[in-house]
Image 1 (tube, rainbow, N blue to C red):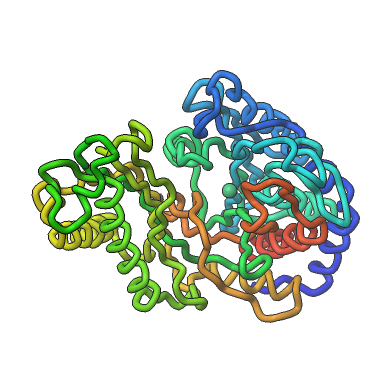
Image 2: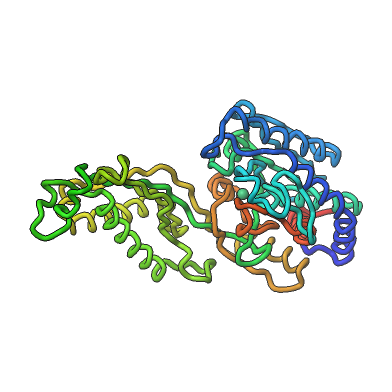
Length: 435
Ligand SMILES: [Zn+2]
């Protein structure tokens, strides 16, 4: 079906009228500190409970709209919220999924425009940790449903609204995975994570996968004054000592070359700007005993943004083969091969552009923006991967921009929130049917 013009206009008008509520609820949820308690460097007990507080707050909003709610924890103290708005019948069901956990704000003094928990508005933007990623999107999805109801329409299919914990650290078992396990399903799902860059509110049917890997390179410690013996012709060489830092650079170089090759060879129709797939050396360590000892141990930690079609096994093989190949160029590394540890894998999702849910979001985008929809691959990863794996076709589209996520002065634009709410409303009307 197609959404009738007057229905669309009536609902969009209601959403415009809801702008203040949309803004207020976004501010309210930003003001509830909900740092992921498992995040690197935070104290679990100190942050535990913030996610639940957000979901308790949102539960009340859903109840007021007539949703049946389920607030439940897979991991103690971390409650997910699932709201179900029963349709009148004979319609397809649509799920919205978003996370309530946020990353730590970093030093307060870096927040030069507004405080991380302030929810302050400046120049049409709401500031605070979680504004873009992704309390704005979560609230916009609720405003969409409210707009439909306020305009006097009822959806035929069910709406399932999932507000989950734990996304930022892939605590999937506690969050989206727990909802899947509990049996929450739908004919399709919209994940409301921020879509930009490069386009605001882009339709995102695919994401990369990401692997987290550590490579450890051995050296041999000796007094640092012996360095000339190690590096000059005629010196004692490996007999005297070996700098793990020098040796780590060989592996670093090798993987840099592979990264260059990926930039030229790994292409995907939804990542139209080439070279998105990268091998990012995020942490390099060495010199555990200080500058006056030749370093005997180095590690490099990589975040590897893989092509959606490459499996974890393929990526592991390609990386390990490269490390082996480069290690064989060096006698020490040949005898002391670097140790590779695979620490984490976040799967990709990769729906075709003409999948019904991709097309639905594109159509909704066009109805609101009056221009052809922009389809694009996600820069990062999100729970859409796990929903797709569970058999719920899921596309990401949401307000906000990853370029301001996770850093200081995070914000979301108010007019983008309103546009997102309209897109979600249109998608729900179209997908679920209405009367
Ligand atoms: Zn997010």
